[in-house]
Length: 112
Ligand code: SF4
Ligand code: F3S
Image (tube, rainbow, N blue to C red; front, side):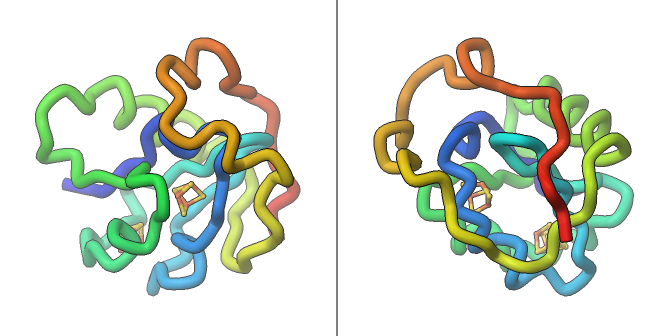
């Protein structure tokens, strides 16, 4: 199994998760992060750190789409291990429905 990031992260991108991951397996897109499924050791410590509940174990039902997105973009985006300032308008996007379809960017983030 692995943990994955879902679209609650899109445009919120709080990055609290990267500070606690013992194996540094988060990768940064322009407006969300993903987890590399082959690097995640399923420790679960990142899940409660996310203020918008964007991290889930892939054992929960219906997460196949997110597993694929995490696996795909983890190989395309740069690694991120240090939290930066979240987007200034992050609060406005908390809990908004359909964020992936409306706002997802395939472009890479800065990484570190
Ligand atoms: Fe990192 Fe553990 Fe979260 Fe996997 S479950 S991404 S290893 S903190
Ligand atoms: Fe995204 Fe939550 Fe991490 S919003 S960047 S998964 S702390």
